[in-house]
Length: 212
Image 1 (spheres, one colour):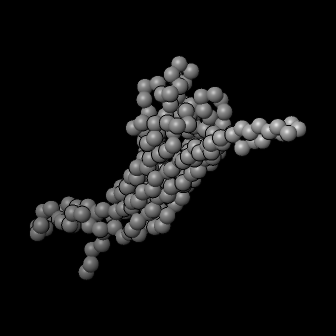
Image 2: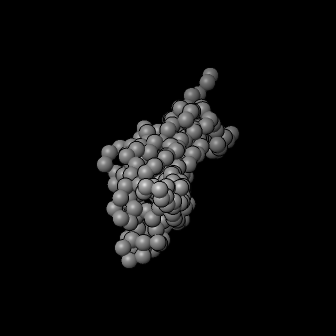
Image 3: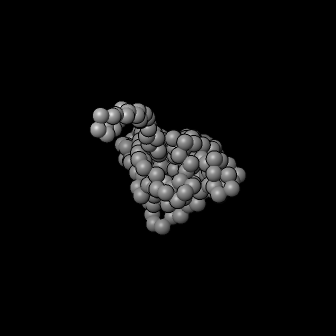
């Protein structure tokens, strides 16, 4: 209530102040996965609080250990629509630059990004990798709305790939050794065997020995 006084006269007025609830933070999350050396692990880049923020562009760098992980495939997320595009660059080993843009922002701004998966990527865990967790971090994260204004606040959750099992396990015998013909009636025979290894069978070296 505001009161104004002039001599013996007063006047009052009321002002109603309405609290404005700040928008929820834009949240970017990279999922986690696990696997053994030689296996593939699929991860997703998820975003929430998008519809209310009228996001036009999201850009970030995804950092990973290139000695542990190799990119197999990557794709647009399930929420990417026809008027949206995903650009990727690979400036150096272990770095992926990702830019996600709404191309229809000027004509139809309310069609901005929806919550959910905006990007998907599959890594192959390299052979010989030791067991344990290898982090994947989001850096240089930025978002711009349809009015070219930066979005704040933005929160992020980094991802990780957990390598399970023991690295460089001992090879095993997939097909038992045999001689053809057997028993040997002449001076020669053909020997065969097939091994298996977590680093791949072509990496194996076979050595034969004749006891006696």
